[in-house]
Amino acid sequence: MKFQRQHREEVSVNLTPLIDVVFLLLIFFMVSTTFTRETHLEVDLPQAEGAQPLVEARSIDIVINAEGLYRVNDLPLVNTQPETLRRAIIKVAGDDRQLPFVITADGQTPHQAVVTAMDIAGQLGFSKLSITTRETETD
Image 1 (cartoon, rainbow, N blue to C red):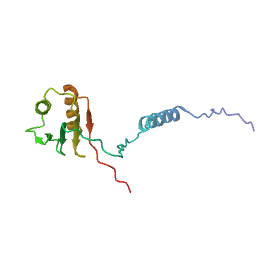
Image 2: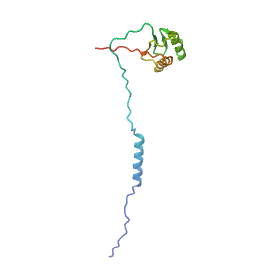
Image 3: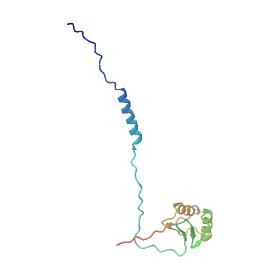
Image 4: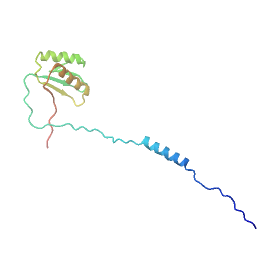
């Protein structure tokens, strides 16, 4: 009996599809993963303790309610337009820009209303600006 040697084909593993799958997985994880650490900004407002300073007899008091309506020295304004607020401040202050400028805003007041009052005070030249807060309760 004569045995003939058969030519065997070399067995090889084709790695091209495997590499394609690995690259697709890599791209998927790169796209779906966030690399920045997201943090939530928690604001804890400072609280002041101690005696309140003496309030000068004449000052400009701006009170802003929760809806964003202004009162200048207890006089309500007809609207919330910046120009109306500007005219009311000029009427109360006259030419004296050294008067203390006090802003009292409700806790639910829109931020824009407070910024508008501060902006107008700065444009008119008031430098003694303060914002009222409530005193902390101590046990």
